[in-house]
Length: 317
Image 1: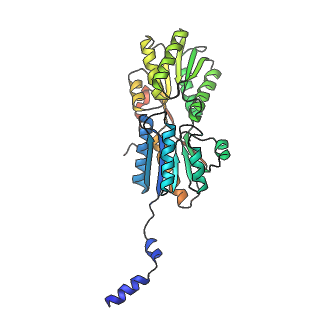
Image 2: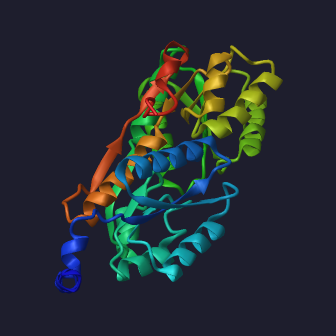
């Protein structure tokens, strides 16, 4: 009887046994530097997705904010290893990962692009097939900051802009949203210069702007990390309370600056939600489901009045 049972088990197709188990997908998630609290929160979103969705997430990041070559090396190593079923990427700039993403597309690996978006025309020119683009509406983020400034300073006031890396979509869109809304509201944009996401450089630029225009009333900064450098410059100039600073990201340090009255406002982008949505979308794609080509992730203007709305999007975890 025992031999008969063993013989019957041997005759059962392997597929019928495997069909009873759920496949665990393996996805690569590549982002920028964890030295920036924004991307640390994004990593937490990937970890949340891994736990909730039963997917294996291989995470990669760089040591600094200006490490596009190192980021490309991580992606190249993943492709050489060959076990990933899909990629979620946040490149430093629109072309910095494209050589390897072209290779991934040739291998039919699905690619989801989040936060720092590769423009459609750039991806098409390089033969990159992006399944879904997920990002906060950065133009709208800039508009929200502009509205805060318009409500805080007299019409006709001088305001300045400190950009991120001028080649990045996120910086360009945030600056566009702020600048257009500020001009339409009657504000005077006296300067707009890039600091390449560098806090020290942003502080130096702000110092020169403050020295060059004693009538300056506000500074829009493309992210919180740079904004903290601007806040230091404003303090050093004795202009705290006279010149307001607004930015984007709602990092812990940025929120602390709001609490202390040093930063007037920042637009929360909830990078953990962005990461979760990316993995959720990737799992659906790998399971053969139809997914949207574009998804807007949530944003919200944060001031002293609603500080509790910032931070993690998934606060229950």
